[in-house]
Amino acid sequence: MVHPVQSVIESLQAASRCPRLHVNAMFDGVVCPDFIRDQWRERLIIDLDPSYPLDLTFLEEALSADLSFGGYVTRCTFPYGAIYVVADRSTGRGIVLDQNMPESVKRTRYGKGTGRKPALRTVDGIGMDPAPAQASASASATATPAEEAAEPTPDDSQAKKRRAAFKVIDGGG
Image 1: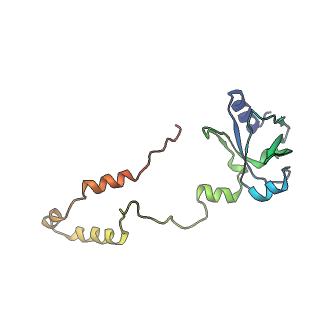
Image 2: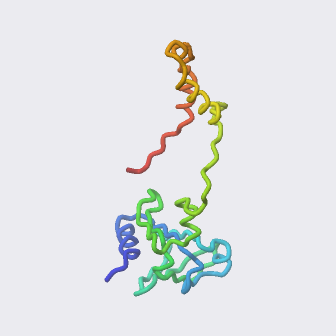
């Protein structure tokens, strides 16, 4: 049976795309230069560029290829268990193998285990202090309808400035 990593790589290559692998270089059985393992540890990214003669070989439990790191060409082997993402380099679409993903990567990727909420920051000088907002909310609950009508409404220019701080990102979908 063909491993899912092999299947996605072959599909991308058949479509003339460049597969990008995210590899845990600390995984048992990974063969790569020591300086690469020391530098990238659990976050090694490999592009299987079809324009380079990789001599890519799929084995039963791993894949191997001739890879160049800063001009230094070496035969590398990556067990399938060390590969946790296979995606198209240009679009980012592919597969994520959560069972292979190292815990340190999961924590930063999914925010697990931090126990802290992200800090809020002011964007373009527009920011709201949560304490006064809560105080005004509780004060308005006891205010009379005439007092509520006297409260100023948010200025349209402020709303436009807040909206301008958002950036539209194409999610690829």
